[in-house]
Amino acid sequence: MRGVMEYQNFLARRGKRSASTLNQSLAAVLFYYREVLEMKMPGAKKLRRPKNRRHLPVVLSKEEVAQVLQQMHGTHALMAKLLYGAGLRLSECCRLRIKDLDLKKGQIAVRRGKGGKDRITLLPEGLRTPLRYQLEGVRRLHRMDLRRGWGQVVMPESLGKKYPSASREFAWQWVFPAKTLYLEAETNLYRRHHVHQTNLQKSVRNAVRKAGILKPASCHTFRHSFATHLLQSGADIRTVQEILGHSSVQTTMIYTHVLEQRWPGVRSPLDSLG
Image 1 (cartoon, one colour):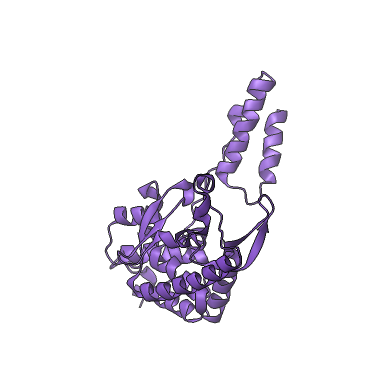
Image 2 (tube, helix red, strand yellow; image 1 turned 120 degrees about the horizontal axis):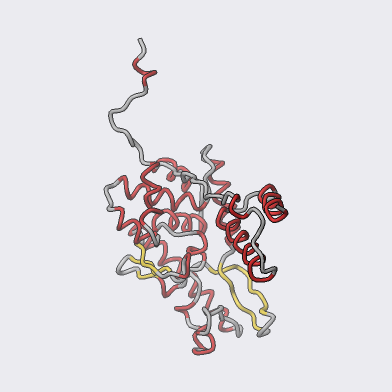
């Protein structure tokens, strides 16, 4: 029974490890016993595989979203509005390139999102003008970098080798570039990265605190609120699934559990007491 005891001890020390991580570890242990030790893991049939716990997402009301955004200013405010207005993940917002924005059509192309998938999401009309100003600032910064012999960004995968000069093109620059350059050790070139995720996370936490919101809201809460408010406004759940980039509609269905007035007309029996 040593194999069972070892796995049970691992479960006891698992901390915040997800069920999928633990099941993957168990599969590795079973493979080791079967292929290396050429024996069955003692007591393997008695093991209980951990299941994923279901957590309801934290969602802000429209009023709460407005209160948080009012506490934010500058670039971080614009990024937070994109998180909520387009349903972007934090990493997707930080990695936006200028070519991914279509201000005329009102669309944002999300490249290599979660799972390596591309998708199209909507660009709020109210952000078109602020984004134009943002891009003008990026253009000035990029021209200054080029004059100094810099102006290069990291290209995705093998595109850098296929198109060596593309890293200097304005279209490939970050929508939200970092303020400072960094020296890439492999090429010995100075490049400009996008803003760091932790900067926006800290800004959002401070805004939530200043707004007096007691919910454990974060950057991802804007995405949850985006999906919930779309469903509240009557959007089709399949449309919301496509905009969010979910592989399964079951993932999108979680937002139906946090909609307001889930049981219209149903009152608690406590309210009917005389």
